[in-house]
Image (cartoon, rainbow, N blue to C red; front, side, top):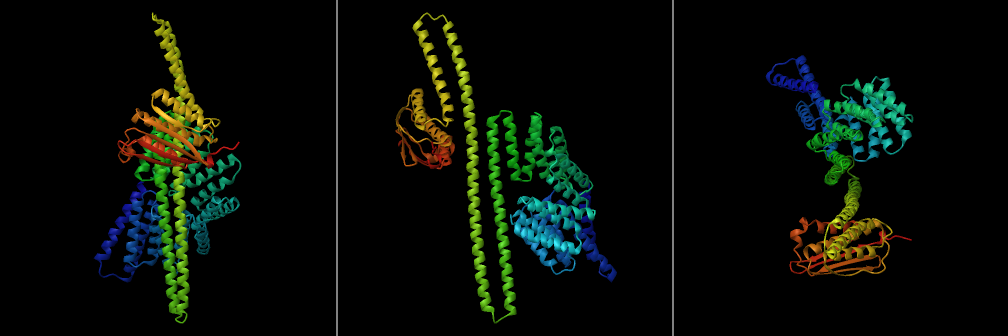
Length: 636
């Protein structure tokens, strides 16, 4: 950090000195002018270098220095420096605004294509390839990397050449082509070793270690890669990543903690907050393995989560809250774990929305750029041949319209798939939460069964020991107490029966209704078919819980009313009808505050059903619920 701040001050001081020289000197010689131009170029190059160093640590400062470099390059009409500054600005924008990044890469590319010095054009194609990978366009990424490799070999830019082969290896590895991935990583290592590229050598050895079958050999290669990267001052990011991978491969918990701690410390020294968060998340699980729960809590709750909130990293917030939920579960704090898990799901949904919006903007920008290129090509063709103008324009117009229509259709399909995927994730998340609730209910049922049974036996013995002269009263108390124990046992057994695939839905619902009648005294008139189809446990749980919630609400708000509950079947559709003559209510006033209403609707939605609520003050309450059971029917 000291080195970086000194570089910043040095760069700014140079700018001030140059500004003074350019405005204060009126009569300069040819040698002085060449010196001043060289100083301008050095200033711009320093700003570009600062931007590249800071784009991972501090994006705001990286953008600031890159914009200053672009301004100076434009002011002094330095084409090569402007191309490098556009590249630096594109790199700084890449993680936050990929559409802006794509625009500046193309701007840099246009300035470098006709220039004799091609080192920068290699870097532009390399950056474009990484952007294509992030937008899941492997085809264009490979094309860009092939161009980058060809130009880098020609101009002998070996660091970019090695990096390009590494990225090609990553693409093939991600599409499960291990043979080609190994070949690309090997090329990258050979180039790095031949040209004494320490950083690239370390990265390549680390990648090649993944293809070793012997664990000892893997660890030996990773430690060799570590030796290389520790020699490179500007490789903090790669060093942290490698230390993290080594830590996760350790079979000994103490060794894993040591390497992950080293990764965390290196990330902190380099101000690499995302690497710090990742190392902290992994460390927390190893602390749990050693029963160091307080350390895990402190690391996640007090360090990692505030850091992720500071940089607004939604994906890491989702992961960290999920980890914190696991920590709370290890403490048996189920309610807190449930609350934290909902926070994790919420951040995951927000991250998915943000990511899809960014990808959509990038696709629209690429489409716009392609349309502009088509327009430019059309204008050039018009100047070359006036005779074929009309026919050529017509063909290009048709192609443009077709391209736009196809692109729009692809975009619509992409957004629809994204919406479906998001909805599916929300449903899966809701199912996971409800499954956790069912688990907690079942656990409480077992505890209630065991504790109440014991308490009833103790009270029974205590009452028998009392010297009550009226034997009838004493026998009546014992009888009522035993009856209470039997009812509670029946209720707790009901919780377990709902979990059993072998139970019939009509028996379970009948028992639920009778239990409510006996325990609460509500007046329920119900009809349940004697023969009902066998359905899977998932749907059976939701239907039973919906019935329980309807009758519970009736006991709370319509206790003295007459309640009608009917179940019928129409083909594979279950019809559940509920109505009472109670006081009714205004659903718009209490729906957001009533957990019971929300629970009924959510459970109906989760099993693909529809629910309709009709009620008003003084008009009673009526529910009409339909559930398609086609996918829930059990075959015997």
